[in-house]
Length: 174
Image 1 (cartoon, one colour):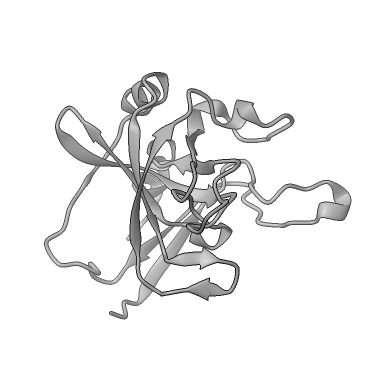
Image 2: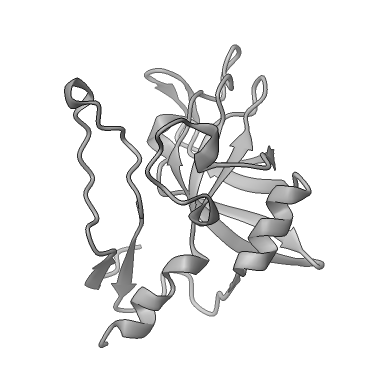
């Protein structure tokens, strides 16, 4: 499906610059953008977004998160199919990485294990979790350390929580 983007909403100061020679890291503080679309991509589909308290609970309880990966098995080897990958949340996210600029409350991380891993190319893919018997949208992938193939999943995935940025949509003029 093709849908026209009406407007892009980015956070104040958003910058997606990766300059390893200067010590910049690929995940920025407030690393998220929203696109307002002309019409829904999937008609009649709605999902709730997890609240800050629900995300905090998912982290504290090492809840199961459903990620979507796009089929990269190893570098340059993919089948092009999306995969549902179930990974446990870490209790901490940004604070797991020294000198990370993102706020802990605005981030979430999950533990990749064995053949259950996302690839760096999965950035922007959604994270879902069951909250009180309901599936809710939690975050989007910012970074991943592995691929679906054997020997992957050594570092984990990193995501930006959606809820803290809902103010962007409320401030937008449609």
